[in-house]
Length: 245
Image (cartoon, rainbow, N blue to C red; front, top):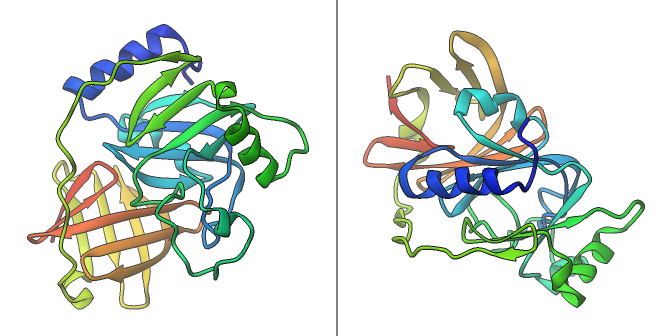
């Protein structure tokens, strides 16, 4: 585990943004997602791929080495959205509503990391940041770290992510998908379940999935959420590129 929020870690992350492809994993935090469908986590992880959240919840840390992730240990910290849907926060939206401001798979990665307060409610943690944003230790905007250990970080401009049209039928996507290094095999079955083999290790991840157009959402049995996108016969998921076998 890497010690959190050191200058050396920021240097590693900055170098990775300009010349690498390693995902960032903010681990062991209390997470206030702002998403009523996913809910909040007393202890979980947030996985970033580029400018977006690609996974959230408990259990993601177990694959950090597999994915070559840069891990930021957020033990004793709470992660909250930087933009808050107040109606969602007050429970005034249906549980099926997916807020574009939430910390959720597929959404732009925007959140703040604050010191945790024992016994603090979800709404109180969010209000604490909104009323005194200077308490944030680290702030992430569209996947870029703009505040680190309380100090502003200069961010270089980069191209926007490519949007994927949602036009395909989900029936086309059933079967086994294998990444380019033959390390991850993901099996999508007709009963709405997936079973993932990693490095020859069977059943490394298992859970439910839903396909809407060219987007696939996963809810792993360990409790975390993730997503992927299909484009031109290729599945892009959590930094991997898969082809159907």
